[in-house]
Structure formats: C-alpha cells, structure tokens
Image 1 (tube, rainbow, N blue to C red):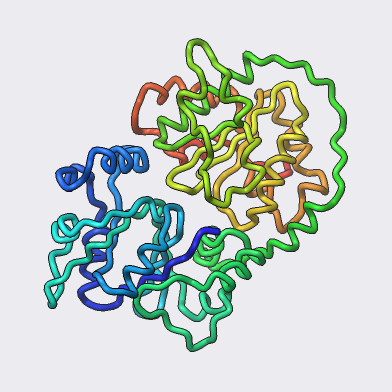
Image 2: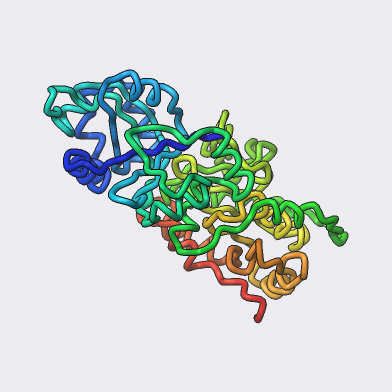
Amino acid sequence: MRRVFIVTASSSEAYSNYQDTIKRKRSLSEIQDFLSDDKLAELNRLYHGKNFAIWGVTPGPGNLNTWTRMEKGDYVIFYQQGKFNLIGEVAAKLHSKEVAKYFWGTDRSGETWEYTYFIVNEREINIPLERFNEYLRYKSNYTPQGFASIESDRQKDTENTYGDFYSLILKLNEGKTADIQTISRLIAGQEIIVPKEKNIREPTVHDEIQWKLIRLGKAAGNDVWVPKADQGKSFEEFIFRDFVLREFEPGLDIPKPVENIDCVWRFGFQITSAFEIEHSTSIYSGILRLSDLRTVAPNSNYPLFIVAPREKRPQVFEQIRRPTFSNPYLKLKEAIRFLSYDNVRDLDEKFSDKRYGLTTEMIVSAGEIINGQN
C-alpha cells in the first residue's frame, strides 16, 4: 500500500517556497552540478526531460523519521488555510543541503529544507478540510499539523471502500461523490459468459498497431507497458522489450488487470491511458478486460480505449450497450472511447519521430465517445 503524507504549508515562508518550486516548475539543468550521475539519470528517466516540482523538510527527529519512511510512488497532499490544494506522487528523494539552499535559502534559525523529495503527477485541487475529514473518517475538528502520514489502518479502510487514494481525491475535487469499490466488487463477481467467436489470428496487424501505440506513448512522454508475453514481439526491426517497461512497477500496488491489457501508458506512477486492441478476437473480451480494470479502480479518471478497424465500430457500440457493461457504477460509456486503426496510423505518421508535441489529450480527442446511441 502506498503511504499518504500530509504536508502543511500555511506559513508565509512555506507559501513562498511553495510558489517557488511547486507552482513554478524547475529544471534539472539548474541543479545538475549538485547531483551524482546516477541521480541525474534517474530523474531524467522519471521526468522524460520535463521540469519538476520539489519540496523538502528541515532536520529534526520527527521530520527525519517521516521523510525516511517515504518511498517512491507514495502520495503527498498539501494543506493550506483550511483546504487541500495539491496532490502528487513521490518520484525520488535526495538529501542535499546544496540543492535546498539553492532553491530556498535558509530559515531564521539558519537551517535549510535539506531532506528533499521530487514530486510527479502533481495536480492542483480544492478540497475543503471538512470534506477530506468525512471521507478519511477523521473527527470534524481534525486539522493537519506539520509533516506526517495518514495512519495505515485509516488509509486501508478508505481504500478498501473507495479504491486508490489519488483517484478518490481527484473525484472529490470534481465535486462528485466517490463510487464505493465494494459495490463494484459485487458486480465483478457476477458470472459472465463470453460468447465463443472464431479466432483467426492475424498477428502482423495487431503487432503493427501495438507497436504504433508503444511509439506514440513514448512520443507523448510516457513510459509504456505491454504484457510480458508480448515484450518479445517485434514489428519491422523493432523489438518491443527495448522500448517498454520490463516490470510495471515492482513493490507498488498495481491493479491485476493491468498486466494483460495490450498497451498501457504511464507517467510517474499513474496510468495515463489504457488500450485494448481488437482485431481477430471478440470485441466483448476487450471491453471485459477494461471493465475489470474499471472495477478495481472505480474512481479512476484516465481514458480507456478499444482500438479496432473502422468497420468494427458498430460492434463496439453494440457491445457497450449490453446490460453487463451498462452498470452506473462503472460508467463505461463515459470511460471507454473507440479509436480506429486509421487514427492510430495517422497519429503515428505525424508524431512518431518527434520527442514532444503529442499529448494524451490529443489521443482522447481522436477517440470517439461510446454513448450507446450510435
């Protein structure tokens, strides 16, 4: 289970530092002279050359003990003046007085915030303290103090009910009520009979599209995952394993259905998109795999795609209307989009040779909403 660390930043000094290195992104070129070659390479891999957010704490037994327990992939959520205003993931840690002094100088006692951590997938939020307390089951008068982690039992209870903490917070930030994970588990437990369909494998087309999704994911600045069984595949002269993650993320809680989805894009430790390619297999089976993923993460907000030939579009829309997939808790009609092979090929032609320019939002725009009416 990823821990959740609450960071209070309400003082004038903390507010200034927050503006300087959270709101204002910083570049690795600024601090490369303070970093070892290994640390610089690690951060380049994490951020894909993009700017980063960074925070730190001053020495002291309490701060040091909390910072020591931090691990990459853990969540940090910032609290200021009665509300939570940012959530992100811990990307890496670094004990460096030099880096801290470069960014923030020293405090009134001459200390600096030398126990630093880099943050990835940070999102601005606006969640009142009382709403946070309601979902985390804190007393109504609870107010965060200093730098601390949420008690493991409390966090476990919350995630058993609502799923991933990061997704829950983003859902609450939208002003929506979080879906309850246990209800989705009951749905997932229903017996589903997949209709048999003759499977005539045409690997070259499937592999072509899978390779193009890998290449597009890299062009959009993501890490890319494909199932282990597919990592030895190749298209033209490109071997998939040379371009994808060998492990999705050892040691982190990863939804089991992720492992078998055809292509998953990830930035930091968050999934940004998931793609099921349907060529010779049943459209139903692809939607079922995405439904499984949605079931274990009902409050997730990343887009899901069925990728198929243009002529299969009516079948996708027909299948999504099935009662099994129409459950209001899963909201598959909102989450799944149809992306044609032609769109994938067009995007690949435009962006595959560019390091930047493609975004996940552009992929979402290329997909068609499955609304059950087409």
